[in-house]
Image 1 (spheres, helix red, strand yellow):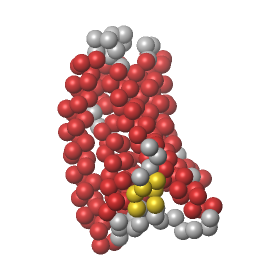
Image 2: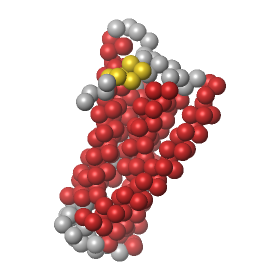
Image 3: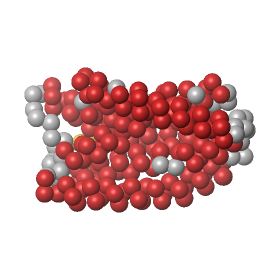
Image 4: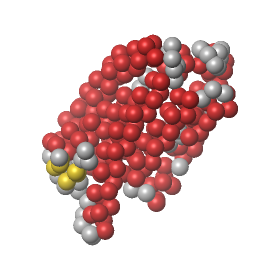
Length: 213
């Protein structure tokens, strides 16, 4: 199966819309799920400990993650940064799913400090491949996807947590990691295509993406 990725082509927008949807649904409801997760066994945290963890996460995201973006852009393409971000995201979910100690749970924001870069990188790639006269429509579509993913995350992830809490309270984070793995596979296709075009001295314009099945 192949998707035409020429500039302004509808199929390219559909392809990256799927990427954006899974990127959004993976993290939109994370904070509320984490609050329930930390209140229960084995952590039994109170509001103060949850607040410290949240502050630590956003401090790492803002200072280290965002601060390193310019450095990453010097050495890596947007596609490579997006791939790195999905790996960071998925790894943080995996650690959170199996964490049993406070020390290990604090590794979650450390490992996931680059996770927030995935969404803006995808949004930027969508903007690059869209003509100037279609930018408004593209961003309207992104806003619609954000709403749909928010609703989907709220309905599905809370239900998954409630249904799996009895045998594995961190199972929902494995589901979130699964969404990141899907994004990783799709983004890796884009990255490999870009790399091949650069090696052939051709201008990269996302002409064709072959989806590995």
